[in-house]
Amino acid sequence: MSHFSRVTRRALALVGAGLLFGGLAMVTATGASAAPAAEIIIIDGYTQTVKESAGTPVLCPTNQVLLGRAHYGDENGNTTYYCGLILIDGQQVQVSAPHWSDSQRESNSFFTASPGEVLVGRQHSGDENGQTRYATASMSAWGQPVELTSYRWSAGQKESNSYSKAGEYEVMVGRQHSGDENGQTQYQYARIAD
Image (cartoon, rainbow, N blue to C red; front, side, top):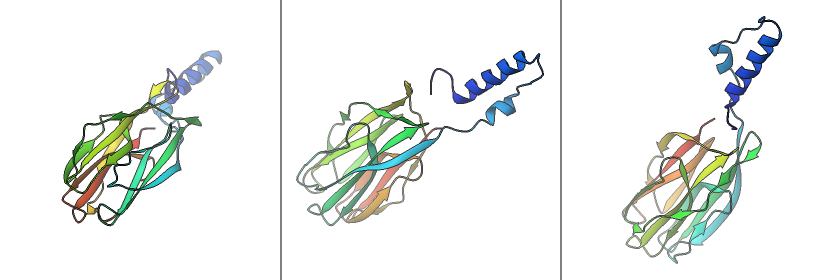
């Protein structure tokens, strides 16, 4: 992801080759768009399990983002966070310093990262009446912002027996929850654009 996209670089190379061979090669938009997409690899990384009600903030390590979360039991149960790192065409994606959101009451919480940003952490203290906040960050590779597309929400599931993880080429960008540990939780994911 330098100043020119992969497709543009390939098209320019073909145009240059065509000029060198006396115009024998012709570049069409169809030929240029057939270039392969960027190679995206997401690698499972850091995992942390905490007693969430204790208020312990969970933050993915440098250059990792949230991929999933699991929770079992009531507010005194264990919560596990799954982080991962991303490679685009062999380049490790750089993740900015985190920014923490304002706190909100867990029993009626809804949070989505700003467009183009991902979740990198979360903190909750107490029961469903306690406060929750999220850490977000932006991503870049080859000196350019990493774009996100195909935003989607997971199906709802009972918080006290929940597990959700990003699909192929996806990262976590949001979460909503209503009620206590028997209430429904959903996660929002977005796909890394290639």
